[in-house]
Length: 529
Image (cartoon, rainbow, N blue to C red; front, side, top):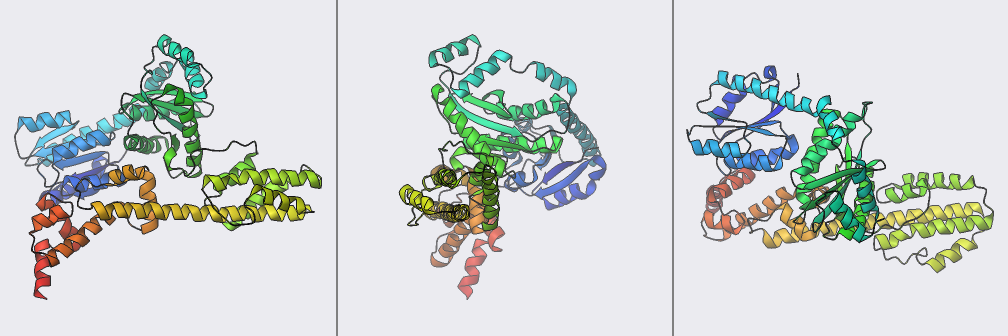
């Protein structure tokens, strides 16, 4: 029997305690992963816990159960909701159903009735999980997948091998909804599935497609070892919604199949002829994501470089390029030694070897442009570099020069990357400094202003500051609130508005949670000193 996770929410502590202790959760196949006293606290837990079920009271401060249910319904497709209330109001029940709530119960809670409900809910969750690997469903999905003509069309479309007029005609012939749309491409690579049959891999693709279908019209097809998802719509695709859908699907895929997916996400375009360009963007982002497997996706705009120079070098040369942003001195030395050993197997004479080293050096010099590096080093400048290489008279000297050159670029690139992270965090702090009084200030609005995705920004901000962005913003607001409490005679409700909390009760709640006492007591304590 599977065990499913639950978050319990009620603003009455005794009811919350009673639910925790009054039911043998493990016996029923559940575990209480967390508890909360209002809807906002539940949402703060969702991204960390990803519960299968939320059981919540309707009447709660700051965010009630109905608003919570609606938010979960819109953003967390794998989480079910049970609401209970002391109010016998049909309107509540009607709204609850429209928000995707599974059950609606009345207080006082009958624990026997609750147990029966949980047994039914556990069975429903089991059936839903089993449906993901139901071979009949997968077989039907397999035979309903895109026919050969559509596969050929989409391959030609993303590779740019069709004239625009022919493309429009094909769209019409195949009954596709592609003209006059906004487009975005996601390139996906699925970790090797242990199952020997094709249906497991198909189910993984279907799980991701179902998640993306909730926010956009999606066409899915394969090219080589990659799965391509073309998103089309009448409005510009919201990167935040796409990334959240990918993350939710990735969690479900890992839970059911025990495999990891890597995704690369392109920019938006409204030009059909630009689809080959955003396909390349998605592939480039995917290649980066494959280097950092702890992330489910990489957004193209999060990469420092948005144009990759094409080269014909072997995989060893390409691997050095991929790892140069984070490898250590010893790791770089090992990779260059592997490259040199490979070159030595070709038995070049001195002149040939000088030319090979020069070509490799020019390939690596693209990082100066890629990371906008300005250096006074003797290695910068193609003429000086060529003269230096041609002046070396032994393979040993050439090998050492190549190692020194790669180590220099590694140091400059890593320094530039750190500098860019510092600038990004500094700009975010400046936005908070200037806009902390805006109640709509959030990580999403900051990322929109900085033109980065929330996932990339959150990782960089915590890496550089040791704190989450939300903690930093709340800390700034509390710091300003303390100053206003001590230096002015404004009432708490006015100060709350001045620091971004127009709802007085919520300001008091947040202040007490972060400062240990209420705003009034804080002012009184300092007045008495």
